[in-house]
Structure formats: structure tokens, C-alpha cells
Amino acid sequence: MEEKNKDLLMEGAKAFGIHLDKKAIEAFDLYLKELLKWNQKINLTAIRSERGIVLKHFLDSLSLHPHLPEHSPILDMGSGAGFPSIPLKITRPNLEMTLIDSVRKKVDFQRHIIRTLGLKGIEAIHGRVQDKGILQSLGGRFQITLSRAFSDLRTLLILSFPFLGERGWVIAMRGNVERDEIQLLTETEGARYQLQKTISLVLPFSSFKRTILLFEKRINPPKF
Image 1 (spheres, rainbow, N blue to C red):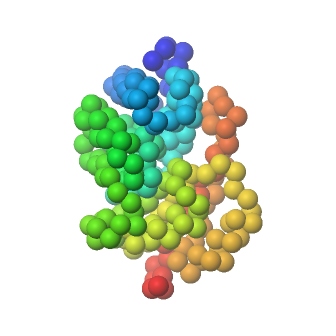
Image 2 (tube, rainbow, N blue to C red):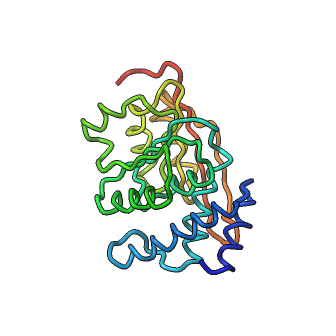
């Protein structure tokens, strides 16, 4: 990674209260190199520049950092090339992460990065969250489900529900979110979830707008 992009990463991370030490920078550097190399053979990301990956993948993933607890099992649904979970794992080694994606080649890449970086307490699973076997093995195990680019909000909430323990959380990373969409969710999913927080931000050194929505599963939701 070019020095100027390392500087962007370090300074951008500070905006989210993160100090990246030498070990973390080396991990991100290796992650970026492997992503670019694999991307020449399989379509992992449309972003193909170092700067773009730093800004729109690494820093975007780290925008969740201030909103995660210290110790909670987390399920990343539709995890693609490992975003946001692997960048978060680099900066928060104590987080327990499970990544799931339906595209085998993307999961192969995730596993390669996990091995290459020597990350512990993180697992990449190939499958669909709707699959009966996945539901049976992972149902009710997580305090948090999150997604950066998985379906529409209502579908994310519906599919997250069986994976969450009592008073679990769904964290959705979106672009601009229309007020009408939030109102519709309140009407259709209000019995099972409560929208606790909406965070709107612009990523560091970028004009990219990000909205983070935090939904809490109700204590005694109705059964469907």
C-alpha cells in the first residue's frame, strides 16, 4: 500500500476513535494486496484502486466501530469480500465474528484472508441464511446481525430474526435512507423490532454518505 494511502487509513480511522498500530496497518496492507490480486480472477469488488478500497471498503467498515459492544457474537450476512467484518476484526480482536455468503468464491477469499492474517474467533460459512441447515446450526446464537449490502431493509430484518438471541440487535449499513422507508418498517416490523438509533455520516476524505440503522429486537416479540 502506498504511504499516502496508509496515511489516509490511519487518519480516517481516528475519526472513528481507532488508533491503528503497526501490526494493524500491516494486516490492512496485506488484505488490500490480496484483494487486488484475487480481484483479477474473480469479481470481489468493482473498486480497483488502493485509495478507493481504503476509503470505500476499509474506512466504511470501520464506521461501525463506535457502535459495537466489546464482546458479542456477530453474524455478518452477505459478507462478500469480508466487509465490514474482517476490518472490524483487525481492529477489535475480541469480537466473535461469523460471516456468511452464498457465493463460494467469495467465501474462499474470506477464508484465505482469515488464514493469512492469522485471525482467531472468526469463521466464514458458505450458504444462504434461508437454508434450513444454516438456521438449525446458527439459530439464536447471535447478539448482533449486521449487513453492508444485503437485500432491502425489511428482508434483512425478517431474515435476521431467527438468528438473534433475546434483545439482539440488527445493524444495517445503507446509503441515503428515505423517511418513507423508515415509516414503512415501523409499521410492518414494529412488533418485533424498535429502531433505536439512526447515524448519518460522510466517510473521511470522501463525499460518500453512509447511514447506520440500529434496530433492537423486542424483549417479547410475537411468534410468527
